[in-house]
Image 1 (spheres, rainbow, N blue to C red):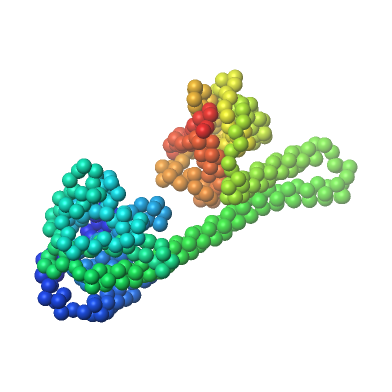
Image 2: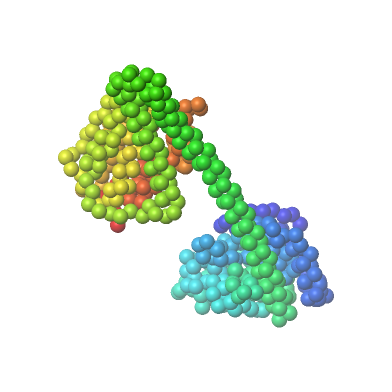
Length: 446
């Protein structure tokens, strides 16, 4: 017997060619023998969910004879899926699936669906396709490539009464029909399979949870490392200027003139603004993580928000050497969260100043009937295509090595706030040319 795995309809179908008639063997075999055979075959499969499903389909087919299709309810979507099957002909799988469980192909409810919903077995020692007429809507059932003459569909129910799916077994190469003993054996197998599947699911979910926790811890450590570094820089500068002013005031108070003091106070003011922006980003991140970013729509005037943000960045614009041009109508009004909108413009303008290389920056507002487009363009070094794919992720920065500044959260915050307003943000960038961020906002989000 040659085994071959084929992926069909997201299910694992194992193919075995040339099954012999095992009628004589089935006559001589006891139910206890079949149970022992099942136990041996299913040993050491509890912790590997995929292996368990494949092994289950093959083992049931070999114990009950001759085909088995495993149906499971997806624990996330609630849809009925077929993750594993074992039968002689792979091309038969689609017909089997469409005949017994595909509601999109003329089956009103589906035989397997009904077994699972009612948690009642389907047992037909003498089965024929015409019995499916009760499950079709004025359509003939799909034709099968094989002649199934005996059929059982048994629900897999846990000890808590939760139905995980069903086992469909049928005979077509073996002349004997199923009897009550076969039904009892299949029900016993289904109950044990449910327990094994539940254990495997718990182990799988535990591994997924552990992975998510490990990722969260790594992200936390990364965040703390970046945040501590970025906060330490302005704090160190503040402390240095404060110490310099203190020493001069003590040693040579006569030289403590406005010409000496004002430049250092201006630097202190700049570093305080920088700290304020960093703390603001940290508060935004905390708010987003806690689910507090749900917008509070009100009548907002976008152009006035842009003017206010530009005013706050006057020092940075002057220090960078970038000339700013604004192309916008006199007034653009929409139902937005004004605070979210402020953060969007703030982070995008900050990004343009940081990476603009002292070149001109342009802000363009395109007002339409139902949508508004905000474009902020710099003419800096641009972003490589490989970096553009992850630029909106947390802690990701497109800077060259040794030039990184910032928390790597600005664009992530932008995307979160834009999506909260049911809009979208796109990037258009070329190395050596510059970068344009385009924000699309519906005027009246639903």
